[in-house]
Image 1 (cartoon, rainbow, N blue to C red):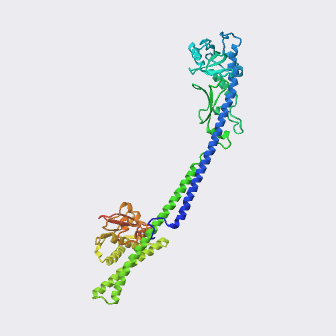
Image 2 (image 1 turned 120 degrees about the vertical axis):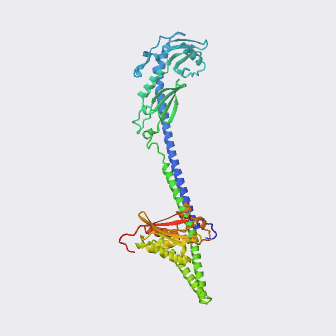
Image 3 (image 1 turned 90 degrees about the horizontal axis):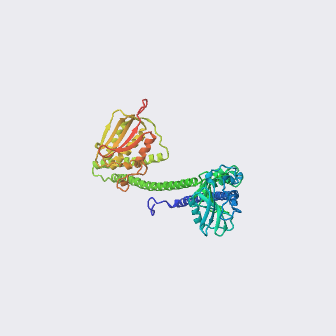
Length: 530
């Protein structure tokens, strides 16, 4: 471990980390490419739908131009033929239109026409019909600014009022003639085209589509003058009309739910959720692997520290045993009392070393699943008394141990395991409690179970560390670098021995400010013998 800081990832794992990072990068690139492919496919489909919308608009314009021009505008303007200037033809009624080709709709008289002639040079007009005089004066003023294409036979111009339109033709450079009508009259021409002609291009997958499934709007300079079909959709295309109808535009809007009927395969759904989920799972797995490696590295460091502590704790009693054994062999004792004291110390250190070795053996057995309890009725009072005698002789002061036991308590457990648990808990209390401070051993019934506890007068265990101290090689943060000896496996072994006996252990505040370690066992069964 020398030359590498604590918690740093071992070099032998760097290759795996690189591979995991590369895997994560590949997953990210694949997810990005998949997302880009879906976006590209979706953009292509949307472009195709926009083309469909544009073709639909052109078809509407192609069908509307002859219908409105030949059956409507031209029919009225022919009335001016052979009528000398500035006289007006006979009044026009709705019956004069060629409704036979438009399905003979019912037309309100309010939608009828006003015939008019304009002389821009003298700024004069002659009109007859149903509209207000001010309306013709406005059109006379507007005609000075209207662009007239010589190639066009007639022009439709929308007035400033937003409710009427002027259809006219030029007969001389400064003379115009035509008629003024309500915009509502155009609705019948629009309806004729929509109801009599299929606007969507014919495809094998779109045979069932009708004009009602598209959103069609006709726009004039002052806004929408006609609407047909759905009122949704987001893929729109506008087409300008021609042949004198250039002030009108048709806007076709298609909804994306028409894609399956127009395009084989339809509009693809976004698959971003799947690659994004896979990417997150890959990130989480890599993070878990790195976290687990970090934990293993920390565990290795603590295990190394624990092995060093075990070695130190073994070295201390061995040094004591060797020293006093040499003293006895060389006959350097000055009295019988010194000889007895040396033998007593050898005995105590041997027992301490045996306890430590026993912990290590139990630790190894627990790791390999070899701890198999032999259940029976364990006499709690006798076991507690045994531990008081054992540690009283080891500590040289049996009066430090205070017993608070209910009489006649027997638990369902393995006496070997319970003995090892109590020894570890008492040894822990001796290490971390104040010197010469009392240590309480207790047992009492609590509900359906029997609680055994060891309580010291030390500093206690903070709430935030009460779960962590039961893990192997764990010690409280401020004890890791302290002079207090410890291997980090004593409390872990207590918990493991409790688990195999179906018991529970925990730590809580003691009555005198220290820590109370509690083990809860089931009571002995009726027919179990101690």
